[in-house]
Image (tube, rainbow, N blue to C red):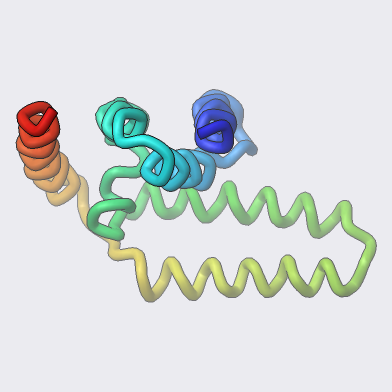
Length: 140
């Protein structure tokens, strides 16, 4: 729970500050909350931050082309800054490997959708969340 809260705060700050990645921190928050507490998980998945930045990635493993480009460019910038600041060949090699794995993953496993698909997915997901909330409230 503490890790989820800290990464959530960093993710929310990353929305405002360029250079601080938002999506990875919010994904960590999602994972930590889903393992720690159903109540926090339900709350987090109903926030506007989740629906805007993570919902399509988490539930459909897809994102818009624009979101994918922005995410890739910011993460490349962060790795580039680390690459410049590190003066150790092995660490630089690991950073290059990290970038290669990231591009491989996003190319093969993250589907690009257009905005109309994204809106339709959000509508169907919101309906499913409503049904999920009713089941949780009914079981308590």
